[in-house]
Each structure stands twice: as structure tokens, then as C-alpha cells.
Amino acid sequence: MQNFKSPKVAAIIVFCLLFFQLSIAQDTSETLPEVGTTQKIGDVILIALPAASLGTSFIIGDYDGAWQFTKGLILTGAVTYGLKFGINKQRPDMSNDNSFPSGHTSTVFHSAGFVHRRYGFKYSIPAYALAGFTAASRIDSKKHDILDVIAGAAIGLGSNLLFTTEYQQEHMQLTFSSGDGNYLLGYTYSF
Image 1 (cartoon, rainbow, N blue to C red):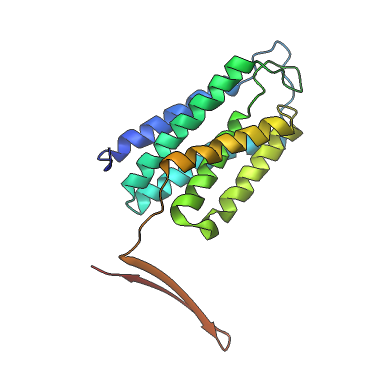
Image 2: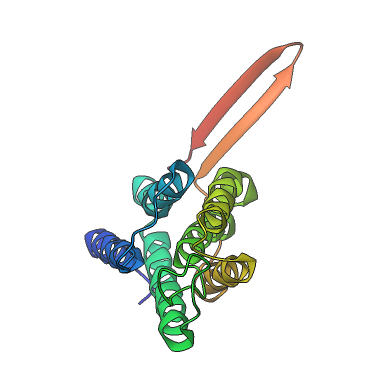
């Protein structure tokens, strides 16, 4: 399917996957550990970064990109949770046995990698910073160790290699020039 005709379907699929991931990530042990601010921020980024990545594709009318993002996220989730339930590694806080790999990390690195591969590195810098923070928050909250987050990042970034192509912007151009303390930002759209 080259042209994705229904962006609403992509959005629904992505938000269902994120809801599934968040519901599975909830701690099911009898004694719930205290959730800190860093972990809460990481949980917010888990939803916000994929939503922003997909939303940006919709805003600029890149429906093929939205479909590529959705396929990559489905693969990321399938590989991540297949490994989680197949390996059953104990979490560092001993709350359950779903430690390897980090689902939060795989999801946010998929989003950051998508922005990088589809739209370019300069647009992905904030996304990588947020993804790195989320990975660190999972280690800080003792939900994962370094191996878990490295594996999650590799899965998320790797899924983009299969589905994501560079965005062709032949009809749009963003320019910036400066000189003598003056700055000019321009946007050109060719019909």
C-alpha cells in the first residue's frame, strides 16, 4: 500500500498501541513502588513524542509518512512485547518480570528515529533529547537497567530502517540568512 488514504486509521492505530503499552506497563505487584517526578515525565513523553511525530506528519499533509510511522510502531511494539513476554527478565525493582527490553525506550526512540530519517537530523535533535531523557527515567526509576534501554533503543531505531523513507519536499523550501546583525527567515511554496 503506497498511498495511505485514511489518516484517521493511522491515528487510531497509534493511539490504541500507546494505550496498550501504557496499560501493560502498569505495575501489577501487590506493593506498588512510589512513582517519582522523573518517571512521571518519562510516562508523559511516552505518549507526547509519538503523538507529536504522527501529528506533524498529518499537519504537513505527509500521509505516506504517517503510514510509515504507524507500520514502524506496530513492528516496534510487536518485537518489544514478544521479547518481554518471551524472556521474562526481572525488573531491578522486583515489581514484575517484564524488564527486557524497555517498551518506553523502544517507542520514543522509534518516534525520534522516524523524525530523523523522514525529515532530517536537525528536526530530530529535540526528539532524541526527549527519548534519551525517557530512557534515563526508566533506569532512574529502577524499572530497567542499561541493557534493557539499549535494546529498546535499537528496536525502535531499527524499525525505521524497514519502513521510513526520506520526505520529498520539492514544492517547499525553508530558508534562513543572516548578515550585519539582521536575520531573515523565508518560506517558499511552488504550485
